[in-house]
Image (cartoon, rainbow, N blue to C red; front, top):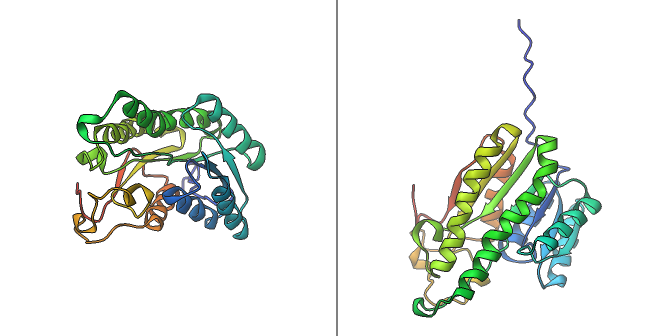
Length: 252
């Protein structure tokens, strides 16, 4: 019998180090906690709410994983470099990245200005590019990495916020496809998750959003997004995909 000389497939998450951007609240918080439960050491990035980020870290540490709260504006290259460096120095080499940081801005169509466009592209899309570029060198050296880009149904349907938001989230799909294609042979997977109407601050302030817009008749939960995120990170054969989590609103 010919011996099997193929490299063993390693989809183990326990003991890995992750950065979750925008990890102090909403979907990011749920993802950070789910990673902690899976044995991942987590750098919880936040922009302004240090207390919330530290509370997430405390919960992760209570599960037996390590965690650190790191403030950074992930739309700024210098902040991103400092974030990745501190995560590495505190927890170890980063091989898992969840690009979750994002903002929305509900503005009537005829009042959307260039500043709105620039702000959303910078926070929602440029941040994902900067973060990915920053973590790739050690991932490529290790020939193992997992990247999730948190997109939105707005990338596929236009959504309910506006073209500035939809474009920022659609850009994440192109980013996902390119990185996935370029890195597929290096043990690094890159996928996007496209949620719709998840219970969060982002939808709470939009009167146009109602549960009956979803075929299932309810909003999704951050925990449901987190469960799917961890399952996708565990699977080394899924890459370049947009995984829909929208209660049946958009099907493909």
